[in-house]
Length: 361
Image (cartoon, rainbow, N blue to C red; front, side, top):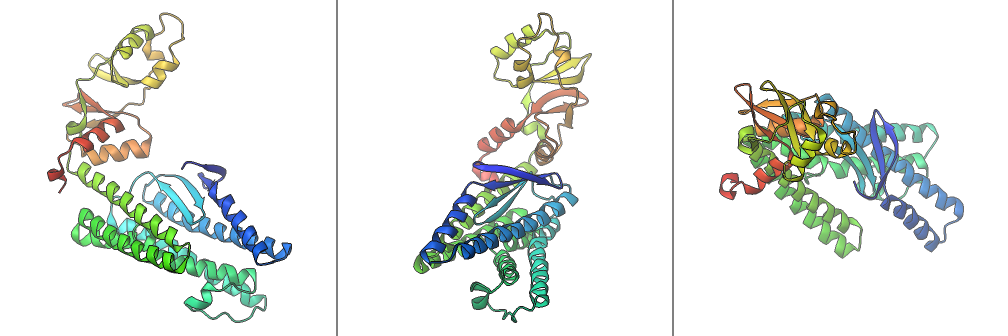
């Protein structure tokens, strides 16, 4: 995500903080000065905000680790002023898996809330009344405030507003009964309805909830587009989107000759074929990096020998998932064991853009 800085890694997942998080700390400080709080109290509330975001991090980690168990790769976790985002490469293939991944977040928040409530009681804190109004009011200790933060996170995330956790649970359940396409459309509509309600409530109440409503609305629209793309791809085969009859090189082709072909071609990736079999892939990036090598250098010295291949009747959704999950830049398409074409993300995007709208419906 743009304007974010990686601060550390947890379980191999990069954790980033968006620059606007600094603006939130400045806003807390400014608000404290307006209210005439002492420096000690200002630092206290900044500490509560930072500790609250650690709880958000644990929430997102729970999603990420559960997604990993189902084979979904997680690129990073980004902390924002309005919460956190776990960047996952793809959606889980089974609807029930999405339900489990989504539910683990609010469950984690409730578990953290129970821990902080127990700590508050153990430290002799005053009894905490659990109600929406009392949860919205600042507590008297950091443990009480963190209890309230996690309760509010859990309550907010279970709203059936896509793309919140509750909306994902709703989409997963609907997908089980009516299919992923209809489930996504229904969950998107419900999520945007809640987003509009939150927006107008925030406007009339002069609250930041209006911004949250805008975020939910845009997030729901993005999820709908992603869902439509996956449905489109599930109905297509690899041969429908491949670049047919691609230009190929021999292992003994020189870099100079390959560059001459590359200069006059719109193709970015080139299969390297020997005796009718694909033995490597020469990417445009590798070719450009090798342009200053000694004369006579062969493409076999710079090609990638890890060739991703798929049959021409493979689901295009499976090919897309493979590119996303396994970092393959290009997949060769085989028909009867022979090279028929190649597919990369550009080809998939082109296929989706040219797909008739009537076919989508």
